[in-house]
Each structure stands twice: as C-alpha cells, then as structure tokens.
Length: 94
Image (tube, rainbow, N blue to C red):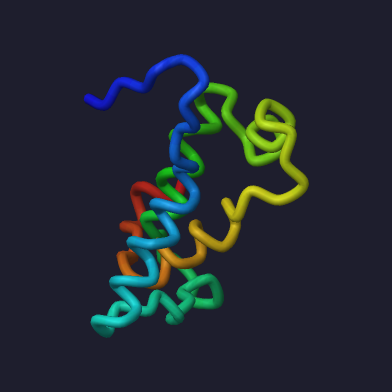
C-alpha cells in the first residue's frame, strides 16, 4: 500500500490503467475483437459493469463523483470484452 503526504499529488488511476492497456496492445493483446453482435456471449467488461451496478456504481455516478465529463468506462469495458469473453450457457441467460 502506498501512502502520500498531504498536498502530494496522487497518480491518476486512469493513467495507470491506460498504461497497462497500452503495454498489452504493444504485446499483441489489443482487445479490438467485439463479441457484442454474437448472441449468447458475455465478456469480462460486462461482468465488471454488472457487479459494480449491484453496488450502485454506474458510469454516470462515477463521472459525477469525480467531476468528469468522460471517464473512459465504456472504452475499457469494450476492451475487456474483446480480450476475454465466453459463451453463456442457456441456464444462465434467464
């Protein structure tokens, strides 16, 4: 765990996430494949979004809390879906 002194600027988590995405893209993991059009597929981004929504954390609330015009949540969700998705079983679709 990292502790910061008062007044010391803390790094922007979005910058750190974007650096990870950039690194992975440079190493062949680009997340450009979208499974949204394929029926019955669920991606990691969908699961993360669903879990956060259960706790009341939505993209709109996140932007409001941090006074942001754009947070990049949709882009990261699409990226996560592109690198990791699976076919949902018939029992889980209901």
